[in-house]
Length: 55
Image (cartoon, rainbow, N blue to C red; front, side, top):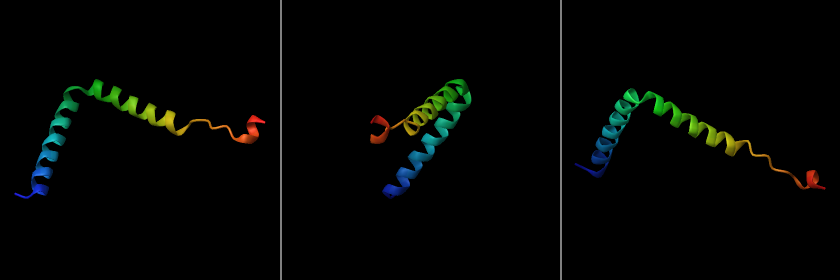
C-alpha cells in the first residue's frame, strides 16, 4: 500500500466515525456548528474605523 492509500483509508474511517458520532450526539453537533458560525461572523463583520472617521 502506498502512503496515499493508507491516508485515504484513515480519512474514510474518521469520516464514518464522525458521522456516527453526529447521529447520536445531534444537539452537541449543532451547538458546535453554531459556535463556528458565530466565530466567523464576528471575524468578518468587524468595524474598522478609517482615518477620516477618527478626525
